[in-house]
Image 1 (cartoon, rainbow, N blue to C red):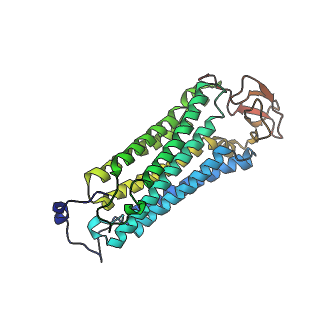
Image 2: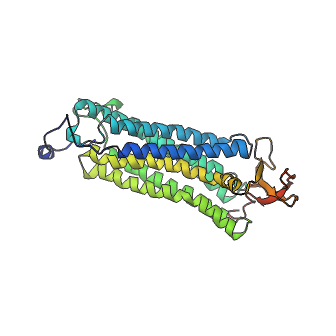
Image 3: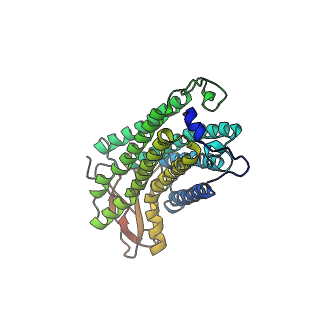
Length: 354
């Protein structure tokens, strides 16, 4: 945290520790609402996987659950920061005890935010492996995204722990001089890399989805579903602006950090929501048409190492052959369900990025 020069301190009003000006409950309301919505979307995703498709949870599901747990930690830090530790007050209205606590919760929140965002991105990249044919450019780029997300998270956490010597100097304001590096380059660099990774997550599957062997309307619908990731990119960019403003443009960091805290937690929750949206296509179609869905996406049901799924529900009583996801053209026969034949394939073998 930058120390304000004497002339800036002299311009501050007298501290008000009894009835200070506050930001109100807006931050807590937004954070709890975002957490509730993301939890609902995650719950619906897990319901589709376990009850509708009737398959075991896979790596991308467990990674998303882990990301959601860390996301809860981010929200808890935001709520504590706003309601107890002065991140809704002007900096001059904070007691020394609140200043120390606010720095501690900031330290914890940054670590949780970084890990939560990385796990969500890795979960989405892992789900792309179902679409990526073996040996394709799409598959190689997906592994690049996984590695970049993991390494960025590791590097940021290490850098944050090494920022001050000892690291508790980050919040121990009684130590003078404070032996800490300038945190601005590190935080802005990580924010920019995170935004680029969010953009990569959004753009990577679009060519493959658009070139699927499906009617144009269905391809556009899939592109739209996966395209919800654009809102995460927008949230990341807004967070970069507030990160720069809080670090470089103001010394009233707790008052203007209000905006940074909002976009920090909202970005994580939006990532979880967008990572779950593509799975809800099956659920919404079931509610609309009453179809029955069977899946062969469990671990013991694979062809050429890749998974196949299909929706069943047509009244014609016929079967269909569907290319395996990421396979090399092999097909499988899907038996009739009690409701009849096959209405459409969920996903077909990609023909792009080969």
